[in-house]
Each structure stands twice: as structure tokens, then as C-alpha cells.
Length: 116
Image 1: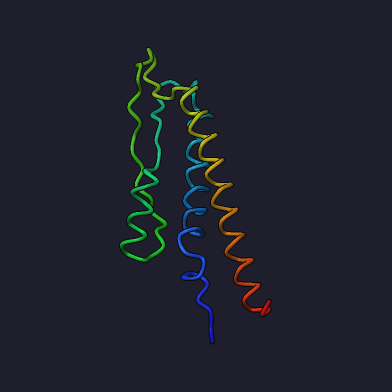
Image 2: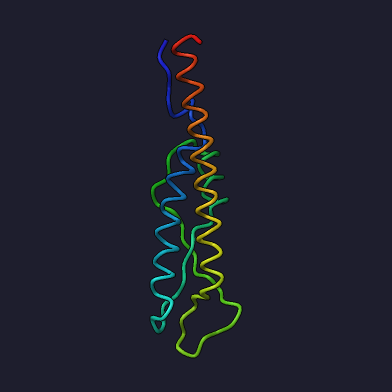
């Protein structure tokens, strides 16, 4: 009997992919915190995962939205450093959690294949 890894691993593999993309975006926001006129962007993680659940297809084109700052800066930059750092840290923790769940799934599949 063949095992479909995509269905066996569930949302965790897609979630990891999305977390990696979000990490890149948040890192770019942090890198451009002092760039005049830079507009901070982000992915709506929940909406992207909802689209994946409803369609069942892996999405590679994530919809990004501009962030609305709490306080406008004089140079037009919308990156709020403390907020971006908190989002980056939360995303990193969520990535680690998804990775842990994925490892547990893989170990469960391996145990079932080995018949233990």
C-alpha cells in the first residue's frame, strides 16, 4: 500500500513553507527599518492556511499586505522595530512548533512502517 506523504503530514509541511516565507519577509522589514519610505509588508498566515485547507493545493504565491503603523514616521517608513522584532520572534517559535509536530508525524509513520 502506497503512502501519500502530503496527506500523511497534513498541514504541517505547508505551514513550515509558509513560515519560511514569512521569516524572509519579516527579516526584510527589519533590514529596512532605517530606509526612508520603506513600507513594511507581511503575510496573513491564517488566511493563507485557510486557502490551503479549502483548495488542498500548495500555494506558492502568498498575498502580502502593507502594514499600517501605530505611529507615522517623518521619513514615511512604516517599520516599527519593536513590533517587527516581536513578530519575528513569534514566527520563529511557531516555526519550531510546526517542525516539532512534523517530526512527530514522521516518527509515527516510520514506526508504523517498521511495525513497532
